[in-house]
Image (cartoon, rainbow, N blue to C red; front, top):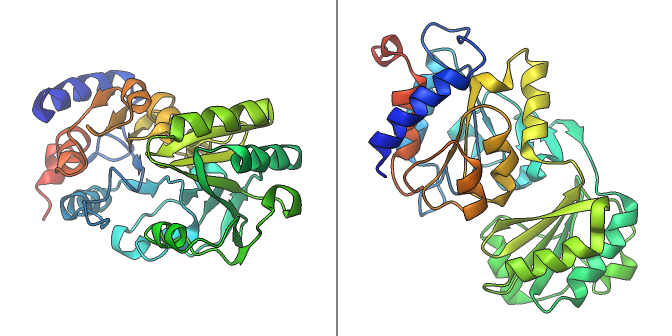
Length: 300
């Protein structure tokens, strides 16, 4: 199904499901929250210019924009000026929320009783290539592996310290635990880690080669709801873009959710509509055809 047909469907459904009219006469929705990696980036891992132009027009007409990502503040810091969000950034899949300058607004750690079980399961799983533990300030890795370090450096992950026997030696309280898996082994790793932590924490697949553990009840939707309600904005009167397993709640439990065409099946099923892949102008098209009113499109 092409984007034009999806946008027509999405517009009808969105206007029916939104809680009411936007506070602005120029936009149909007050806010947009979007995942950062797949939806917003082009193949060179830079924000897609068409998306940025549509975001700027939405903001000029009174809308607010936020980012919701599994990344840390360090990983997104360099891109924030280019994207220009004016709502707090949801990080670590919802475990931490920060202002644009990095000031922590809210944080929830992985429970201490789940940390050892999670680390031990990752250490014992043949599907796991490496374990990275993220605290609010410091980052640890479980091995000195040049190829692994090179791989994670592309995601701007630069561990501060190596803890080789991490399951027994790590004594801190992480915000998130990240597992880099071997190719095609994310499902196997996620299952093993989920069994180990039980209901004490949750394991989610966040990319084709990563699984992450955060506290139970932590997800992007909960963090976004907290942010928007504090700003006196109704989460149902916002729209959302995502593509992966960590976007499911965001796409399905708030306002209208749009999954990119390259979405993981669980994210595709969670969204109200599936649009074109992230190497297209799909986000810009949805913003212009669904979100902006005709009067906004006339503003130059």
